[in-house]
Image (cartoon, rainbow, N blue to C red; front, side, top):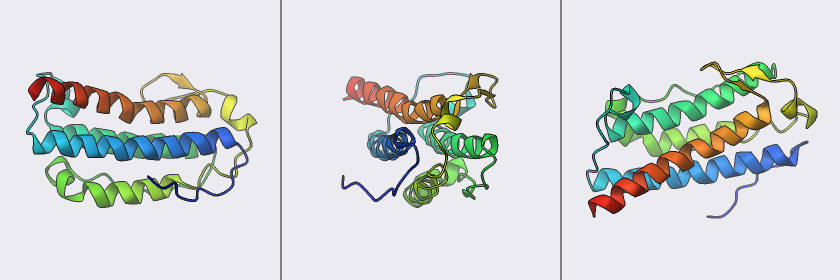
Length: 159
């Protein structure tokens, strides 16, 4: 994949994590598309985000939106104006366009933030865990990696 121009960041650690987030969101979508083509079934659970491949992809895309909006809120940055994630029954048809929009919105909001603001203070996440901004960025990178790993395992046992 050719690397897009992400511009200059005051903190190159943030730039690296934004680039990694984009890379793994793209590969996760490709793996999800493969799982969808193969009609992979998720394990039975009561978790609403794991009822189907469509709800899983919606969860992944919605979480990415949430991570960036949360970071912007904590840093008193403008709202990145990311469109709402498509509903599950439209996610397959709209995933490519929504991901392109989402990743475009991710590229610049954190560019002007000085490094010290990424490490201190910590803030309470929407699910109740304390994170500094740098840790939330790392969480945002790992989230699609973990789901892609899950999907790859399901694909390998089904084929």
